[in-house]
Length: 172
Picture 1 (cartoon, rainbow, N blue to C red):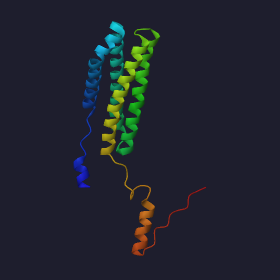
Picture 2: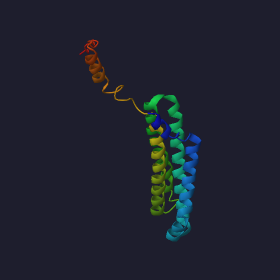
Picture 3: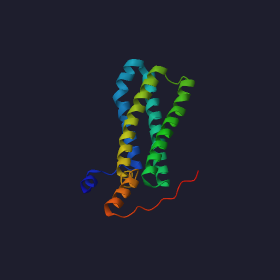
Picture 4: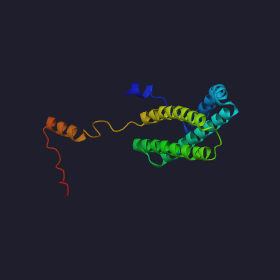
């Protein structure tokens, strides 16, 4: 158990997660700038910039929601719920920010959609990586504390020769 505690690195805080999301968005925009310009010219660069900004806004909202909700509900179940809520907020903010771009024809639809999808998937990979680290720090109940607790107590009682405590019958 002590080995596992040394292997687990702390999950990044909210500020670090936002910095990673911003760095990832900027890196994607820089890496895709030349292909976007070659594909759709200046409008491709506009689509890339809008998609990168919208992807970052969604990630920012999701990270802040997860950080805020994680403080409200303590324990491992609370951190899982906060991460799920953060992912839901990210999806909603991304969709709500992308809708006006489509309705107002602010950028060419196909390049914008491709760049938005690439940015969303990259941010999703980052968020899943962070989520796994956060949930890994707050492991759930062990088998002796969770679903197998009754069997473990009964086995201990049988081994010691004592009778297990009587449980009240459930009400119908």
